[in-house]
Length: 118
Image (cartoon, rainbow, N blue to C red; front, side):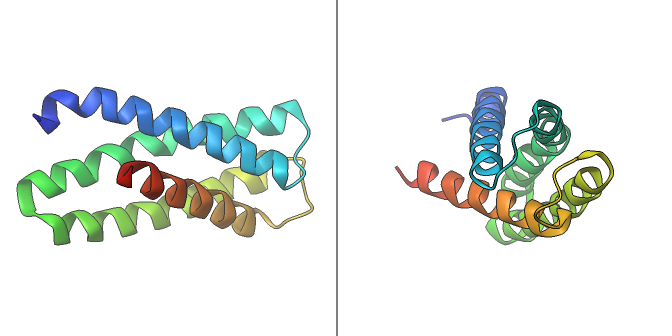
């Protein structure tokens, strides 16, 4: 399989799975406001493409260790940037924005790992 040629399909699948997982997680945690759901979707549209694409490039160019390090750093930045957006724009306040971001990203990441192993 030519990973570079498949990258747009991989990225689209990652984004769709992430948005579905994180909005479901948000609903499970009690988010009900439509604007809050829209913010969850939009913040993932902002962060997911980089988190999905750059580790693939790093794996091709530098190997699996570089991919894993890149993924860890990008996931940390995604959590922090999403938490900042949640703090500023979400009306939901039952869970602190950083904890919400960690929870949603952890579930999304674990679901992604499971899907990729199938």
